[in-house]
Amino acid sequence: MASVKRTVSAALEVTVTDPTSLEFQIAAARVPGLVIDEQLTFELDGRALAPVEITAEHGSRIHGFDCDRGHLSVRYRATVDGHAEPPDVVDRDLSVYLRPSRYAESDTLTGFAAREFGHLRSDGEVLAAVTTWVARRLRYVPGSSDPIDGASDTLLAGAGVCRDYTHLVVALLRARQIPARLVAVYAPGCDPMDFHAVAEACIDGVWRVVDATRLAPRQSLVRIATGRDAADTAFLDNHDGYLTLDRLDVLAVVDGDLPVDDVTREVSIS
Image (cartoon, rainbow, N blue to C red; front, side, top):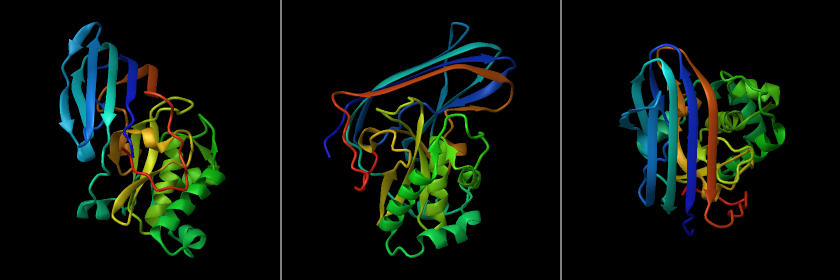
């Protein structure tokens, strides 16, 4: 597949009312095959802060620092070019991404998943059927879910946002013994524009991406963070004090026309 040049950015304004320790996952993942030209700044009341960069799995990067009271401004901008091959599937993946997790509680959906999808023979058929089923079952309604809702809550509610769609897809796939995980991404074409969440599943030894929201073409996604569920991939983690997120602006565009996404094809994040 031809490479797609993408420009992504994020701007956050945060009021910190008590000293705390913060971690951000907003930078594009560093993976082989991609060229990333980026700028990331943190300023507290106009004073530059120097974060510590932690390299996580699958090229994810966490930027953390201790933060005093004040107004924190965060700016990230990057151009991403090239073509990333699907990440390797290692033995640990086949264990970790089969387990129930906080928001993808697959153990509670085992019987349901067997009834709905147990007749399908191949993992690829299950992936396609689960994604289509979730896309038809749920309504995309901003504000309809709670940040602590899991896949079972979403199934009962019948509505949610991208993370809810993804948690339900991931949980149903794991319930059918297919390793699956959540990926936080920049998504050119996404409307409403925001940090986006999609699911990756291990199909015939290759990580394939699906998006039951159908909000953005999969071919132009930019990987940020990869994990069991949203608990591993949050764009901001606050580990001590109190803060208010006053503003969040996310932008992701491609150089040229957006790719046309045939949802029946198997695609990997590139």
